[in-house]
Length: 229
Image (cartoon, rainbow, N blue to C red; front, side, top):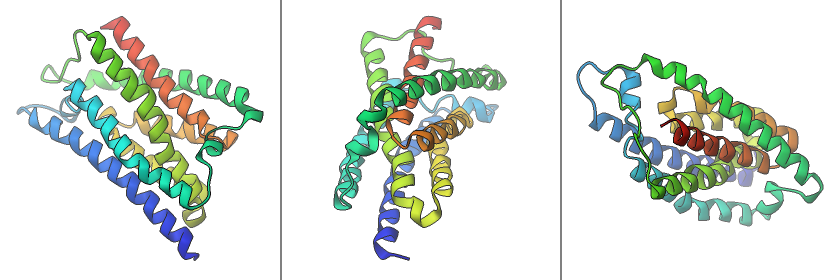
């Protein structure tokens, strides 16, 4: 196996695993800190992002801190990240596909509401009201930072740097498992929508599709919560 390809894959996996460990580690810590006797797994998971401001800041900082390494990996291999994200020739079609997948992903997200019915009265009930600052922080962290940066790590890295080592489909699925582990508290929702985004990415060949689908779904979720809280 080409040593350069192997080293690139190793770096891509290391960066993505580090992101997963940082964010998931924080979520597990917060969940465990709020444990009470009698809680089930759904109850415990509900506290993973109970401290909204800190959770959003952890997401932003973890993604941004690791981004220079990601950009350097592309640069060292002579790969234009801009071209990986979008192409003028297919931009309109790719944006439309991303929007469609965002809506479908948001609908899939409604299934998590059914899962949440398994929680007891000990679970975190959610934020009763959100300040303007909290809403802005959620939009930045979930809609833009997560939507853009996570797709570079979990989809872009998988295809571009690990596809030749593990096989493209296997690499995308492996990284999607990490993606699901990072958002473990939503009980598999991230893994399911990640499969949709993999399909969109493979169909278009451009990261803008999963970026729009990911960020768009999160923004729809924020709007849904504001309207129903």
